[in-house]
Length: 264
Image (tube, rainbow, N blue to C red; front, side):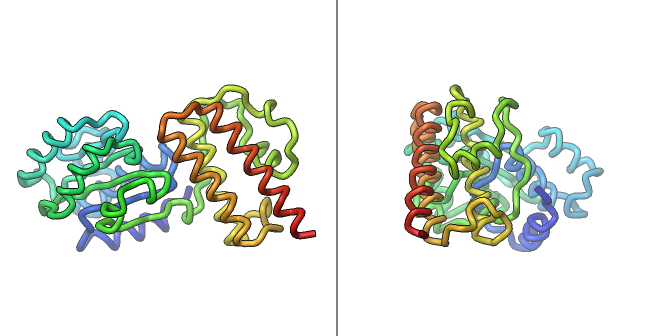
């Protein structure tokens, strides 16, 4: 993904950054890059020179007041400890507290964070990374600045299992052939990436930059996007990645076939 356009938007936030920012639709690799880039922009005197002590400390995850937390692993005690930390003035211009897979935060943690966001201490920036904003409490979304990352044309969709061909997934949606040749066993991480890849391709189709789904109209494309959102929600609920993958691909093909029949 070309981060130039996104970084230009992030630079505009430096003078008056929001206390809470939601990034939806990014891959794991992209999300980590954004956390580092934004931390550099906000805390480097040259807005991310990549050579000063601050930028280098951020790059190597060695900076104080720079937190990257996994939503699935965060406990309520972690939030209590975090509250004590953010009550103190940070050692850098802006303390960064980021939650990867924030959609997997448990309800107690989410409610505790909501209370913090209602009256956020100054110089503390919260970053939430989610597949889609709907996976967070509406009250958190309403208090946050939202970036939809799929709009920025992601291209880096690296999978742990290199035997999976992403292009074949789109071919199956159109043909319905050889699903089980695509993958019989799939990891949760790879399925997240696949869902993000397909979401991005649908958005590109709506923007007329991707030809795979162009025969379908906007309403039909949204139906496919809803299937991907439901698959993502099921994955966050700890359903079997194998079952979700099979269900998702079959539903995408089924709806593609129905919509194509209506066009005739």
